[in-house]
Length: 237
Figure 1 (tube, helix red, strand yellow):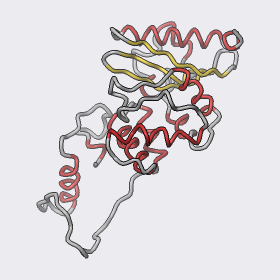
Figure 2 (tube, helix red, strand yellow):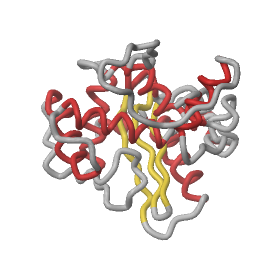
Figure 3 (spheres, helix red, strand yellow):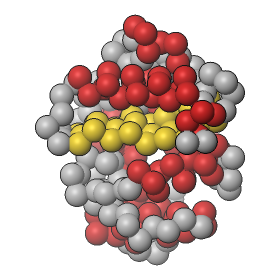
Figure 4 (cartoon, helix red, strand yellow):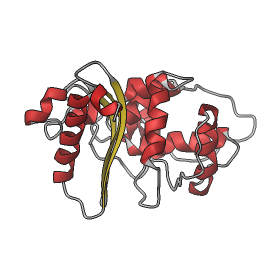
């Protein structure tokens, strides 16, 4: 893909095409003076004219998390499955993702992974798993520093900076909530780390499931802001 295959490279919600390979070829051809392009396979022994490399995986993780880029998240999940030797299909993701998480020593038996983007209603991740994982994210164990650095931040960065998040009285928690947002037709979620008002770091996972509306986002933010207020009092109860 070129510029995430966005119609407008400067907008992270701009539409994508249905043929990113051809669009990449067209962009390459335009730099050569408008020659025609087509998709195919090079013959055996053909010389390599040039190559490009992606950004490091840590940068891609940041880009996927900060604005919830579903396409990039799916691609990263497939790469994880390939690296685990599980394959590159939807069916490979259960084995691939759990293998990728195995190094962190948490029980993954309750995880159900249907896709990498999180758009499938068949995914299932217990809140308790996320709160345990975010303890390790907060401590930057292994490669999890890349996850922490990519998390949206209330009122400051990414999908928690939008005008409908942590607004009004909930803005008192601005800058304190480092968390990943989630939304599908029957669920809103928020999970991550809260640096509470008294300095206590807390991990949390809030799920609103079922017949939900946009009001669920404000309710989740209100609960997260209350956790911010409670701090150590909450952690000791």
